[in-house]
Length: 357
Image 1 (cartoon, rainbow, N blue to C red):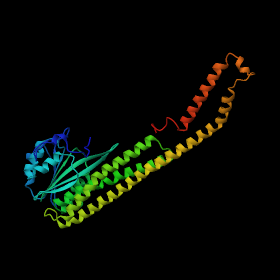
Image 2: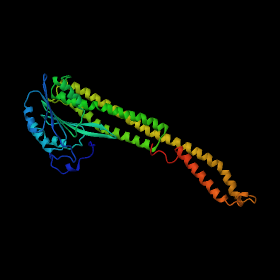
Image 3: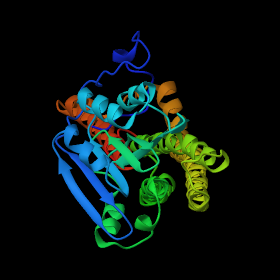
Image 4: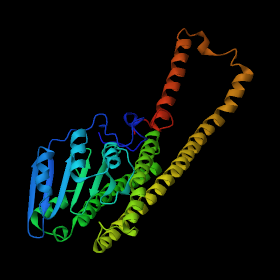
């Protein structure tokens, strides 16, 4: 299960700054994925120990180190010591409920991006990125990510990744995560369209629950993308020797994508809010139709009930009074009428309908 963005974990409270503690239930990394590339060559490895990473660090070119899982504190600490990463940044790697941000530590940058997954609800996974002059180190909570397109470009030698430095690699990874927001939002858009038809045609409590679920999912997406826009903007506007001028042009495109995603999210949130109004209006109209039918039935029986109440049906010549089966037959007729009316109301959806739709 991916981690949702909440308040600080209890296991991180009252600890000194820079303390490294694995989050409860965190995935234990099996290997360390390493890409070392230059303009002419690409080397890919899976290492079992951080000690084996030291030899790769000193070679020329750009180094990408990826770790799936933050359950092993020693791996995080050893990688931090090897690349000279700040202890506060390493603490944030293990505190997997960070909002997207950029922290400048002088000789390296720490960037947090949230990767979204969708099953029945939105699940958010923290991706921590460190940028140095010649390396990018990424930590993920679980295996499975949005980086396969970047890996394929490196393996095939296509694209611009090999022609640029580590800053472009960080941009490419961020852009891959942001690009994965679009199909995710497309799925939410299809849900909104389907709910529009349901709300108009057959509003029910189940439909209302689905509208609430869509609004909650959109709120989770907004929480992930809104601070990401500010983080990318800070990379654009703040001068940093680790980010080349040419890479800033690509980061500008990345910023535009975050703005587009936010526009889509706000549009869908407004549509979901309108669905609530449509549901209330449809439910009100439906109730008015029900009340109109019931009012007609009641109006028909009001004079009949009045006459029966005045005379009491105590006529001298009533042949049914002399028959032994009249009383149980009358009860049977009354029960049959009541059951028939209940079944009719249920089929029309006036009572007992809506939970299973």
